[in-house]
Image 1 (spheres, rainbow, N blue to C red):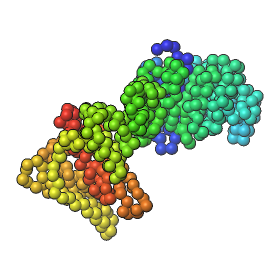
Image 2: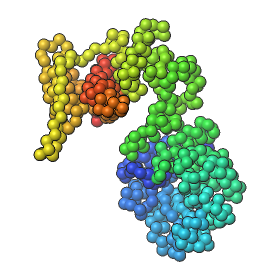
Image 3: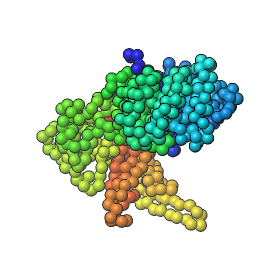
Image 4: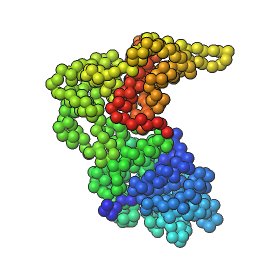
Length: 530
């Protein structure tokens, strides 16, 4: 790859974990660092040494590892007011992290200097310059984060620029939009002005309070910034930080700036970090979301089928994503044709079959079905029209009961199922017990099918969602249930709709098992979870 013009600085492990609900274990932090380093991030900030045992453990572990050319940074603040650097415990802890890069912040806004720190502008500048000099003497690369720079610059440009002058010996001067309230044209103007005074050394750190963090970072780069900071998936306090996932794609694909060697890994990196953070993935995230290249309207799909770039601004594969054709009441024949083709079924535009499939889809969605997140149920519908759907069993009856034992302070649920499999004259009669209707139906059904289909225990339910379709009908409202299942290698979604939540759950559950049986017969490997 060509020499980079812009340095990527990731602060997911420090700024990112300040977001509500975000936390990583020591092992998580090491795994994320490894993935980011191999992906091509230049500097990875590991945390604030001394703030907690986990961060200290991270820096100890990081010293003995190779990071594929990436540099590890430790974060801290300037020395305290009226305290010598050599006697400031926080500074010594930052030194002892023994990282090649040291990043620390200082105050750019006079309001913070006088009202928050309670010191003078002169002492504030000394705090900055003393801290820079200390770490440069130790031959560390120094990144100075000018906190609240844009607010400080608007309030008193001379004071804000004076704090940068105090940090002149730092390798990089990062202008921080800490409150996230600055607009792109303001960012571009200020960065351009500051870059004239400190050419080739300006960085940008933005927050997303106005939904402009990525746009502001792009504006800064256009104005001469050579260093950008952010977090994977935009994690961070309040509304988050600049989303590096979107920023990297925009800089590399739109501004043609070399950022990472393997941009096609972008989606995997995003999903990996979400998984470790135990956060639901944003399906509407630009570039990497499940719907980023999803097409639903019939005319759109018809155009995409002929020329993908007619409705796609980049190739989905360039960021590790893929085109997704949705089927719904808005679908035309092109949607169904393309979707069927992707699951290995051949249909013809003018055939009666495709007309029947379309009719069935529209009828089902009128009843409350929704196939966008239930590809498995869509495939079963198409195969049913083609005469290629083979039920696993014949249901005789099932009963699901709920019991609340107040004296024992516990809730209990029981399901009874009667069914027959194939030509067997034997009636399978099984019982499942647990705390919820889906769990007990699942247990009873698996127990009945296990003697005939040994693979049932490979399947795990990973998600269960219930949607009330017509709240105006109160307790009589129709219910849609979406179930996501996995065998540890593949995942698939199925849907059921009924006036009764138990029946809707049953329909989705049966579809899930039937779909897996179908895929096994068509070549899916029999992989056991774990």
